[in-house]
Amino acid sequence: MVEARVYNRELELQGVVDNFSSFTWIRRYFEPGEFEIHIPATEQNQVLFVPGFIVARHDGMAEMEAGTIESLVRSGYEIVARGRFLESYLDRRLIIGTYNFSGKTENAMRNIVSRMTPIPLVELGELQNFDETVEFQATYKGVLSYLEKLCVTSGIAFRLRPDFTERALIFECYKGTDRTVSGAAQVIFSETYNNLTEESYTYNDSAYKTKCYVGGAGEGSARIIVVVGDGTGLDLREVFRNASQSTQEDLTTAEYEAVLAQEGEAVLADAPISESFSFKVAGDQYTYRTDYDVGDIIKVRRKSWGIESTLRITEVEEVYESGGREIMLTVGNTVPETVDWNAD
Image (cartoon, rainbow, N blue to C red):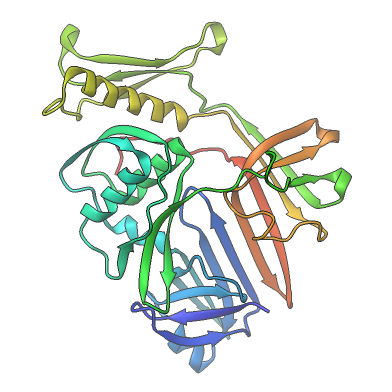
């Protein structure tokens, strides 16, 4: 039985609600998840569900995420509360000044969080020592948006894990498990196994780019241009990245060109061929959050559609209604919005 636990901003428990008519909990790997809960407009619920309070989905397992109430709608005898997971707090901060970094991506994420204007209760968790590396320069960028971009280009995710006992929000990086390799229990969703239903497949290459020209400091023929990627004929899709705001100050030419190249790689990583496959989990062959979880890499097969792919679970939507639960998985990269690394 799942219940909604409501906390104040100091992570102090205010109440428990289990009389909701609908509770949707959307977990995402590369960006904050979302929630929506429909509850009766009782006097108690009107006190519990207020902007800024924190909602956690509790089902007897460890609470790895929680969300903050950002929207409330009162209609008749019902309250609808919506919000994003606590990582959205990072959307309230900037990378102040110019920040140059070269090293492990996990360290870059942790450094960005540690040097931003502090957020109450947020502290760094245990270092995981992931091997992925990055070089970049960021000036007055949005902390959340930049962390999301680092996630997309590295495959490393992050979260603000609530510790309700110690009243702390733990910033930590993590990776999903590859469930397709030897040494790990393989997870395959296929019509052959009767463990998926309501499938939906999407392909889109309208935003796909293969070669990026990055323009750095200088003007005219003296401007530094770095090129990453390739392609020929109709398979060549070019894009220009204006990185004139980047500065070579305190960087050697090689270091500066490496920063520009990283920006180009990031542009290409944010403009892939988009392929996603969504489906509702059927049967009990696998146990959710034990055999598979958000961020894990699994195999999906829909032979009648010619689909057989190894893809990451990028979103899990949990819907609780009428005493039951439905799980909807999205694997692969969904159709992207245009990503501008100059944007906040």
